Length: 121
Image (cartoon, rainbow, N blue to C red; front, side):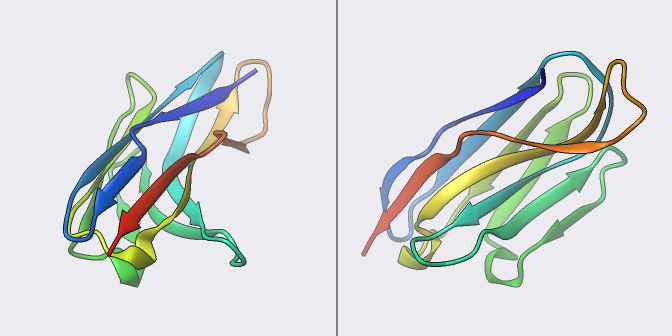
């Protein structure tokens, strides 16, 4: 069983910074991409940032220039450095890993349990 585990959420004032980390544990044959999604109360889950095993990244327009995603394929980890945080960044942030586990021919999405990020004004 593959399980991504997040850490690093918390409460911060507007303009501050936070760093989220995620490690995918379990029997992983090949990692395709890892990313961060978020869900605010009453809203749908949305992509924040994603990085492929080849190093390609994409970001939501709302976080470009403020957030930076980085990954380590050898360790199956991903981090999200968040700066210039705004109250509208408040949400539960979920780590996602798109990978092929050992013993499977299929790539699937695996989700962490989420970590709360709260930005006060």
